[in-house]
Length: 123
Image (cartoon, rainbow, N blue to C red; front, side, top):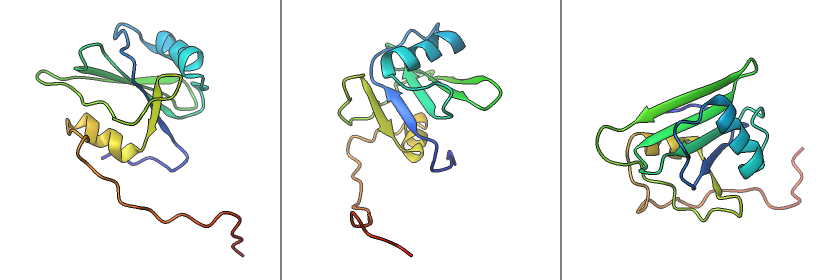
């Protein structure tokens, strides 16, 4: 299971990506297509056309890192959230862990979470 600090966000491109791309190509997609800063320290996830390959790009304060996985059998199941105009959805790190393990989240339900009331002041 991935354990990431709450400040790290996970963005998934819902459009198929050329899996020949590496550091520079993926960072260009992040800034040009997704509209995010690739050096922000967030995780950017890209799936291949057949959805049997995934690449994760992130910046670790000294350089880009690319994590890659190819399934020998089966396909990754994309998140079913509605993508924004940039073709990207934001998911939690726990969801990314489950996707990378090959679990299909289509039938999964998220329980309601507590959120503070708008304008609430905590002292």
